[in-house]
Image 1 (cartoon, rainbow, N blue to C red):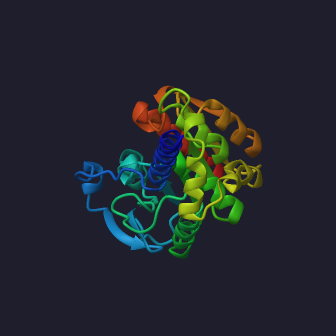
Image 2: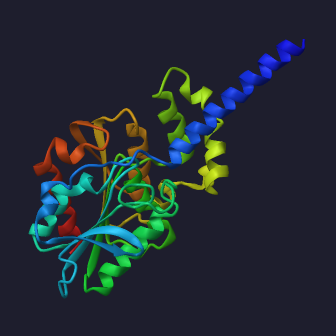
Length: 281
């Protein structure tokens, strides 16, 4: 009996350890390393500290810029996510800031909180752009970055004049099981306790991270909700909920996987963004 109990206890301990490791992985995504994309090599771009965050910025000191942009990457991504679109917008004379969110290189401070603290950074950056003369501020975010924009709007509805979200989750409590199910068969069941571990490690409450509520607050204002055709990580149902709350239709990006909307068709993506610019002006 003692041997049996020892085996059971050891197995339970090992299982909980696996869940704890998974939770740690949620909060500490892999950090992208490597050379800065060529788009950021132009003299227009500077890596600076803004809102206590490493930020790539272009045209930041233009006076009376018509529109400024805050571009947010997703979980496990980085500033390079927006190299192409960032350079496109900068070339048109817009002010652009691209932060490295907590837990993502080169930001060594803090952990990922799936939009809770990231939304505070977004609010601060939008405020900084307005202080520097931007009359309007548009937020563009992919995956967790898109969800962060909606969370920021719930905290402070005046943060953005327009929002583009791509592949954003509607509620974290529904997103995590989907992510875990994609890891291995029955991953959503096996790793269910990992969310509780992550809450204890970070102080966040998964059930309260609901970007869909922020989309509802933003309803009636210029917004675009994008979904990638072959997104297996954040299914179309998320975009439908966000779009319904924001009072817009979902726009599909054909042939694209999760968080690859821009690289799949840069020209089409740029047209989408410029259409929103016209609505915001």
